[in-house]
Image (tube, rainbow, N blue to C red):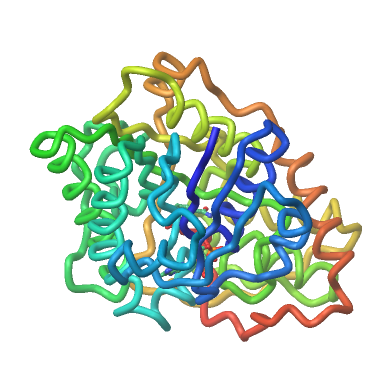
Length: 336
Ligand SMILES: NC(=O)c1ccc[n+]([C@@H]2O[C@H](COP(=O)([O-])OP(=O)(O)OC[C@H]3O[C@@H](n4cnc5c(N)ncnc54)[C@H](O)[C@@H]3O)[C@@H](O)[C@H]2O)c1
């Protein structure tokens, strides 16, 4: 089996590379390293079954495949994951985020059509915005501010969804859409502004954990291995073209509960700083995973404490290394 993965050097993309290669796939990873980290691909790059292409997928696909020995190979699946994913990154790279989710998705569709591949498009729970329906089912249309600071991400992901589903109808391609809810694990970046890395790094440094608002806002957190299991099932099961499926962990925790668990696992006293909530921060977010259970026979298996322990171990091991992205988090909402 052959996969092309856009966004291969990122958090999810690099774990997907490793998982598929463990399952004997050949993989071509494409990334412009806008928010990715080349170290995530060290293991993969040591093998002949992985090829890395340094390219911007917002450019026409003939450009990002031109350096390959066979530019138009026929991958079984194109996983289109390229996009900044954390608020810190997508606000810094707002126009690039809009480009990769709109134009980049159009090129991913064009490539998949030319190659005859299945396309898996990585969308997000942010498609639901600040939801008025709880938990969120795939049939819910969302409550998104189209001109707010998050719109570069939310609305471009929604455009990507619209383009992919229109291409299924008009071009007859085989494409599936995953709406990913907050996912965490090793290889997240220390300074990317998401709540779990922020809490882990602060706890390991013995610093107070920054809680936005009163900390009663809830999130559901899915461990990366669980998420990838769901994504691969969605991409490879026959007969699922046109489906949009939530993948996430329905266990719901307040941000304050999360802070307490991280402090306990890191064996530090819980100290928090309370800061005002940023604009458009959703109050609640939890996936309804009935569709994933039914279509994919999938559900998450990793308990939050177990996943957090692995994530803390990762940040502990990297504590003395430069992260390359150890920027000051502008805020910490827990959303991605
Ligand atoms: N991690 C989550 O909880 C989460 C939640 C919802 C959706 N998602 C989606 O999953 C995907 C991966 O997220 P992640 O957490 O791994 O983020 P990430 O920032 O770690 O990875 C994204 C990768 O895409 C690359 N990239 C960005 N723009 C590109 C371009 N124009 N051309 C080529 N490469 C480009 C980056 O360099 C990076 O390696 C994204 O599409 C994101 O929107 C993630």
